[in-house]
Length: 116
Image 1 (tube, rainbow, N blue to C red):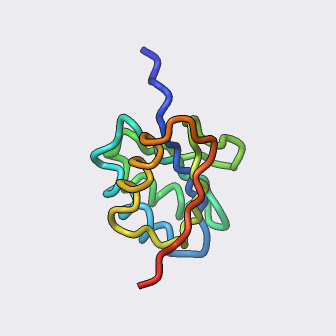
Image 2 (cartoon, helix red, strand yellow; image 1 turned 45 degrees about the vertical axis):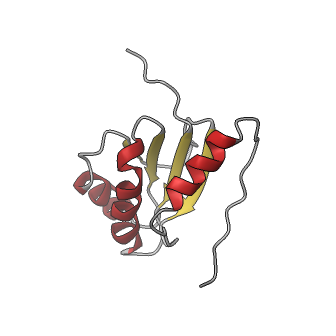
């Protein structure tokens, strides 16, 4: 059975040591309710062993994929390039998916941070 193309592929590139272990669980918590709409692809960075081990520890998520090397950009209608040292704010994915489903004609979505 072929898996349906997700609406959003989040491509996480591992960065400085330790960041992926902080970012990936938070990101997967955000995607938990949307596993049929969102896939998360982790690509190794400076420390491939750390990236692989972090992805393995989070492996119970059916929408998580690990890649050694950075050739595959993700397979979604939209691709979100996210560095591992980016801050994922709770509720951000709800807002992103709402915008994408509200505007199916969109070709791009600009993401920026909000100031408190």
